[in-house]
Structure formats: C-alpha cells, structure tokens
Length: 458
Image (cartoon, rainbow, N blue to C red):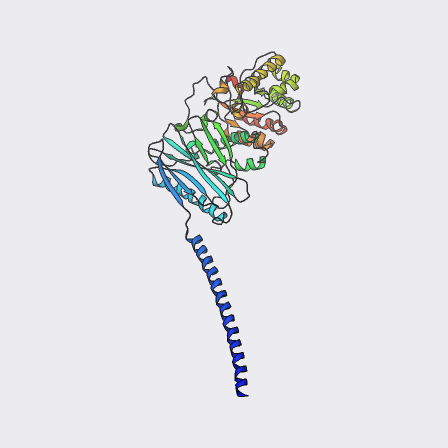
C-alpha cells in the first residue's frame, strides 16, 4: 500500500517538474528573443544618432584680387544645402555676410525640423563692381520647405575695395531726401507698369514697398550703367518671400547721384533744366490730350498768359485731334511722349522706333508742326533709346506727384517744396485734380516773380 502511494506521488512530482522546466525554457527563449530585438533596435538607433551629417567647406580664389569664395555643402538627404558667398580682406564686411548666411541656414534647418521635413536651400552670389572701386555683393537665397513653392530673397552688401568702408543708398544719393523722393517716384512708375508683376503684386503693395524712406531702398547694387533695387517683405529673421526687382539706368537719375557715381554725359545727349539765377520755370503736361481736363488747363494758362509744353501720346492725339490742334493754336509747345506709354528701355529697337516715329507723324499730321522734343515714359532712357531719335530729350526736376496724390491742394504743396529758377515742372493734363489745382500753382509762381516758358526755352 505504501509502495503504491509512493509511486503515485513520484508520478505527479515528475509531471510537475517537467511542466515547470517547459515553462522556464519557453520564458527564457522569449526573454532572449526580446532582448535581441531590443539590442538590435538600440544598435540601429545608436547608429542613426551617431552618424553625422557631412558638411564640406571649400575656399577658392575669385577673379577679383582680395576676394575669396567660400562654398559650404551639406549632404543631408532631407535638408541639403549649398551656400556660396565671398570673403574680403575686411573682417567687418565678412562678419555681416557670415551672419546673414548663418541666419539663413539656421532658419532653414529649423523649418525642416533638422531633416524631418524635406527641403532644399541654395545661396548664390554675384559681385558687382563700380569704376569708383566700390563693390556690391548680391546674395540670392532660394529655399523650398516641404510642399511649399520655391521662395527667393536677394540681400545686398556694399563696400569700398580699397578702404573697406561700407556705403549705403544715402551715399549714392548725396544723403538728400529730395533725391530719394524723385527716385521713389521713378521706381514706382516702373513697377506699376511692369506687366510681369501685375498678377503677383498689387499696386498697394508696390506703393507701400516704394515709399520714400531710406530703409525701403537699402537693398540695391550699382554699376557704371544702372542701379538695381530689390524689394521684399521679411518674416522673422530670414524668412523669405519672392523679391520685386527693378533696374533704373543711371542716365535717368544722373542729377540725383553723388559725384563718384555720376556719369559723364555730353551736353547734347540729354536736355535737362540747368540751374539758373533767373526765375524761369517750364510747365509741362504729360499723357494727354484729354477733351475735358486739357481744355480746362488751357483756360487757366491763358488767364496767366503762360505758355507750356504738352508731351502728348500718339494714340490720344489720334483719338482727340481737335484738342491737340487747339493746344498748338493757342501757342503752346507739343512734344512726343511715345505712342502708348511703354518703358522703352525694355523694348526692341524696332518697337522703340515705331513708338517715336508714329507719334511724330500723327502730331505733325494733326497740328501741322513737328514735335519739338521727346520725353520718354517714366523718364526711362538709355543709349539704345537715344539712338532712335534726334529730338532733344527733356526730363524734369520737379515732380508734382499729381498722378499719385490726385489731390488739387497737394499739387501746390509739392511745387513749393522743390521749385527753383530753371525748374521743369512735371504734371499730367489727364487728371481732374491737376486741372483743379493749377490755378493756385500759377498764382503762387507769379507772386514769386517766376516767368513761364516752354521747355525748349530752357
């Protein structure tokens, strides 16, 4: 009996031991498997963290003595970049450029979350020289973040290659706020009439960006022939939006420039209002004729026995021949202002010829007399445009901004601010506000002993 009980007990003990050994084996195997997976994952994660992004630097000589080019390249698959920028012999200048590069790079990596969002960053450079040993650098930043479209910004830096001194737009324009105001008007005209910008930038935006403040015009590059301005709204730090770009020939603004930047122009190249001691002013009206406002202006001119010069558009002479004829019959001067007011510096030679010649033809056909001079739209003129006409080119030195303000009272304010002996005053005979404000302008000028002459008289 005892032997049977002992056998039965041994059977259950052995069974339990076998079951426990099986459970222990399975548990051990599972723990080993999990540990292996964890080790593998840790190893992979460790490898991911410890493999650095490779950034390569290269420095090379440029074509300009004293300037080296730095190229910085990242091979990061999600957030690559290629940055090229010049270095000079002057630490202050280099620091400004380097700070811009670092801000652009930091902002880019922040927005890509250091590679979690795909992106691309490229900064390229252009070195622009001026004969006065002054140089400009334009850094063009192109950036893509995720699904966003490409964004661009252009930043400029300026220095004298011999002295290392920086220069600004104030130095270019003699630190004269009146010069800045005239430049602002011309730039705004150019941008308003740039068809490629019309879909992207509203006139309100352009007007805001080109307000006559030094800060609005601090992004520029200047050559011996032209000055280019870049306008762009900034986000925090180095956020990007597409830049607005416009180029102005120096011949258009030569009288606004400081001496080191001025062009040497032959006297017969451009007819400008010279500085005179006598108090003569030339009243000029652009963009007409207009059947209502031109006639009203003629009545006011007659009241003050004043003669003026009307720079007419060929298409409006064609539309209102009787008004053009009346202007001439009342003793005023009629001159050429192109056929339909384009920026002639952006047209082919054939189109420029057609704009000028067709207008000369219609003026002579309607009035019986030839155009006496030529005023390019927006004052935009270059050597190619000059070659298409023998007429003297007449610009202005007093811009009433009547096209912008459309305020009869402001017309006199703007004239008072800038007029002097020998001035050529720019107005437009197509605006009702100009017609309404002209009487006060002539009354003031007459009270100040100014005499009214035609543009050709100056």
